[in-house]
Length: 336
Image 1: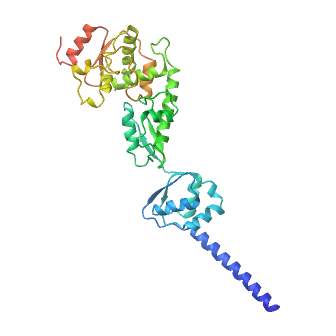
Image 2: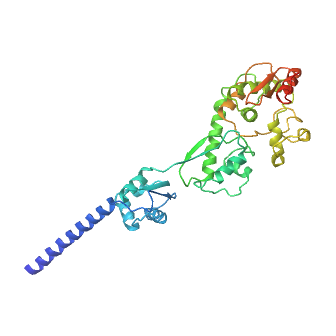
């Protein structure tokens, strides 16, 4: 009996010792710096990933993580319920525990993409499609199908996506990023429309968006935006043709090769404001907030014409005689 008690006690001590050694080993592993193949190694955690799937993603990225140990560490610490999907990075000196803590806090790496004012939607979509950190899910989905997926009753996407710099984590989908740009565009347009001047010949926020896109393409000189918008507002009130080249260029599409000819001005398209009165049916580009505000808060004046001086600014005139003189001076290069 004494002999049995001795061996039982010895077995218990051995079990305690082994448990202590295991715990010590686990603690050492959890807090030991990983030997990374580079100073920073990025990896992506997909939505709904289990701790084992996360460890596998890290391993696939070149991070020497013990998958079984990481899985148990996450579960026993209950951080498995806190892991957030997104893009992360392991840094020199990181331990498995530090990586798990970063995942639980959602401390993600970030990227950014800039969608420029004056871009067409086609250019925006190409920029999104060409970004290696954005997950491509839309493929060749049509513009109309994309707008329907966004819940918009407008089939043509032009001008509806706000030009801005968007911060995102690697692995963000193309649809999610475009949805952000669309929602921001809707919010900005609503805010700007609420600040419109009374009595404008604009029937809806969408028409303001169309006019803003013309202003955006007509001038890069900020102080002149409201004055340029005022010219088009005056023309709309009088029922005059807007006669703005950027709309003709937009209607030409791929036929435009950097130059507008007389035949192009006479060739009718829905966007040719030399052949059709009023605003074109859609925006022709993405408008920034300044151009949107100019469209709904135009400068009050009597100008009906303007011509580029060639230095980024414009010369304005109230009648055709003055305008022809300005054209001769600034376009034809001679004084009259």
